[in-house]
Figure 1 (cartoon, one colour):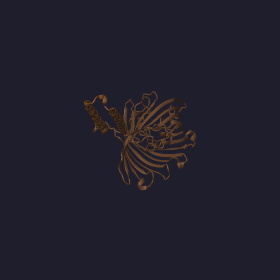
Figure 2 (tube, rainbow, N blue to C red; figure 1 turned 60 degrees about the vertical axis):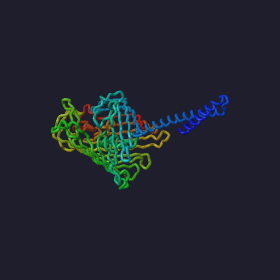
Figure 3 (cartoon, rainbow, N blue to C red; figure 1 turned 90 degrees about the vertical axis):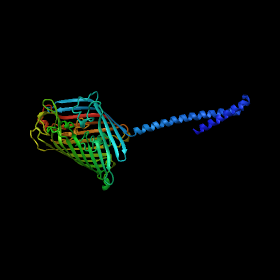
Figure 4 (cartoon, rainbow, N blue to C red; figure 1 turned 30 degrees about the vertical axis):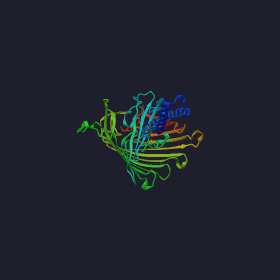
Length: 478
């Protein structure tokens, strides 16, 4: 800018001098060299002005980009997309077979992460899951909170996760509070079949679905020098009656389902190893059913305790082999509720794993889940993977996996289930998976807390006995 002013001043003096000279000397006698200097100075002034204008435009563009980047960089976005085709085959207790083939679905997840401060970060996930050309009306319970965004519905987007990790206490034993809609779905050991890193905290055998709560995690690695050692204590609600203020003083108002849990994680001195032990209690578990008159009702039916042990080895000794094992015990104690309700298997007196009026006897169940995956060292076809999983549940096995992304909710099976699969990578972010699930039910009501789990062979008729599913899916995680 100073250069322009100086050149302009010089030009003015020259022009002024030329005008003074013009008064006494004929124009034709003006020195040609002086005119050339004037023309040259004017050209330089014009060039400098144009350069400054372009420079100002460039600076403004850069400022705009910085401002835009500052806004967008506050949250990092990632995309998970899946298209899947399922082919179901079922056989009932009478031996009749039915099928539902060529069922296509889309699932979209928008993952969000933001480092707010050194001691605080935000994580979120928006989910859409729907069958092709479906409006969402065909799937029972898709509106229930743990299932929103987890089971096929319409094309609406649900907030599946939204939580803050805040390291409230630093030092030798840092304590982090996880507040909000928790990372409680797609837990270990689903990451092997899904071909991802570990995506959640708690064993998927006992819990899978969206949930709201607060969890405090004490990181014990510094004082023990043991990798991944941590102690967690959590509180949440499985059901909250947000209309109770209208029933103050009304003893008939339904109680909230409160959930308390403690979890201990530790590595075992082997790279990729993890052991988790947990205990979770849910009081005043709610049944969401329809009474004999067709009216939807909520009722407290009892308490549930879950004790779970989980062991994982990822890429054991760099062999490409992954192994996992889960074992869980469920203790369900009904509170003796006797009101008649319509259960999925007929009209019976409703209770927690019972049809007997006034029954308060504890119902013990158990289940285990085993699996392995092997990454084949065949670089020419991008190191494909094969895997097998097997799980088995007893008569009174019950867990909180109603929000499982699996349409069959196989880990809730009161019987046994086998799954085999093959993963073919396409590139760093995408893969194909071919698989088959084969489920053999011994008792009815898998995944439901309502009613006595009767033997399939005793029920007979159209009671579901066996269910197979052959699927192909394309998955992108970016």
